[in-house]
Image 1 (spheres, helix red, strand yellow):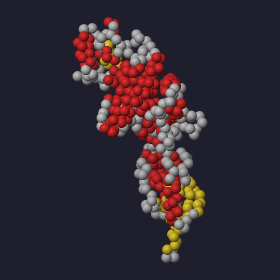
Image 2 (tube, helix red, strand yellow; image 1 turned 90 degrees about the vertical axis):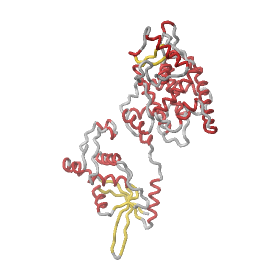
Image 3 (tube, helix red, strand yellow; image 1 turned 90 degrees about the horizontal axis):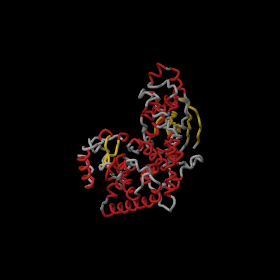
Image 4 (cartoon, helix red, strand yellow; image 1 turned 45 degrees about the vertical axis):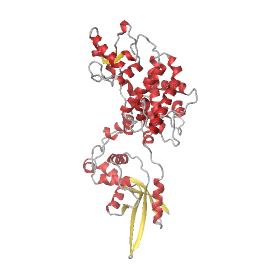
Length: 458
């Protein structure tokens, strides 16, 4: 096999395609698979002078009946060539960099884009200079010559054998603040300045081949951590992660929220690394961090002495019921409210919320944390438990309560000695808070419901 590195203009490559002198070998090529968004971004990259990988072309020379024919077969680069050809044929318009669908980073969005929303005809008619630049762009081509056709096929296999970048490896290359946040706390061992936080580095269960799984978990926990003050949980799917990275390109690494996140990780590591503990699963890490964030500000530090044992107790009950569910089809509350939601659909917001509500409820029962300020009505943890226990609906009007409009009403009122405990609280809108005689009938109804574990509104 011989190889020659050469430059070919895009116009020359298209001429070869047009005259059927450049083609794909359908016996081993997979055909066009790029989405139009990928094709648009390739043309955008060319117009920005971004370098592209080598195109590998098999140069075939045949003598038939005294005549010589030369052709090129694509070994590697089919998707790029197909995208260029489709744009040249008028198949699509290019992105405006400000299009949300394009997900361009801010520094690109702020640059002029003379080809925005233009197809090939508009580019030719309205900006001939850009049109000519595109077709005169030279691409690097590796021309392969071999007398053994199977060598070209073997080269194709070897070129494809490297693992393509997965979703998180692509996110690592994104500019922006949230990428920096995930790299700093989640860690990337190949880069000295990103060792990662000890919580993720030493306590999390890591696959034998770690291609960003810990950073994915860090990104997911961050999403939930920073958004939970709005009283909502987010989906943690690949698409949701991509969208969050994009929406947070201007994420502030020096914000109070990031300082708080670091403080919570420090506390989690100090509490869970004291004894030899089995590595923490992703779903456990999510709920541990969110719960510690609730406890660290509002409650006396006495909770810290019981936290490790509470978690081990929770884990043992969860594993015990999981085994029974799988082997004997026996189901208990740990399986019904937690275990089954760690299986299929574990990244859905509704399942994360159900798991978290159960987790903090069971941990709360074991720890029995004491609020720092006993004059406060309810701490963050109690508010969350009561809020989700009642499916976020107002006990008075049966309408969903936004988190920032939530109040917890004492059924036996606080001023006459009503205790600040879960059994004495229901969620209400600020304007729905019952008072005076109105509270007597309301409280009696809800005391009976809570006693019977009935949290339905109607």
